[in-house]
Length: 109
Image 1 (cartoon, rainbow, N blue to C red):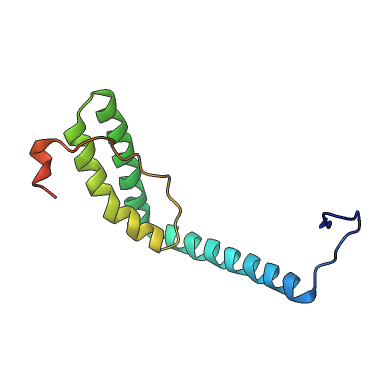
Image 2: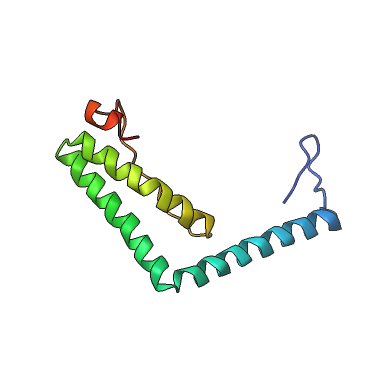
């Protein structure tokens, strides 16, 4: 319920506001539908699994304190995750390593 700040009376939304809200819901449903279709593709399924495995490997590399491997895994994840997100799929946020890049990796960029 939308109330004004000064009085206890309720302000009703106009037809334009209701239409805009419903159109936003329609866009969200269409985006979910496209993502669902994209997930049916075997290649996309494998790409999603690769991103998940890269995240797991990054976590293990963090536990082993191997920063150069974490940076390499993070660099491998970025383009693949960007493509999958452009296809409408939602991915967990990448756990990018913090701190300086090791000297051995500095030239690999």
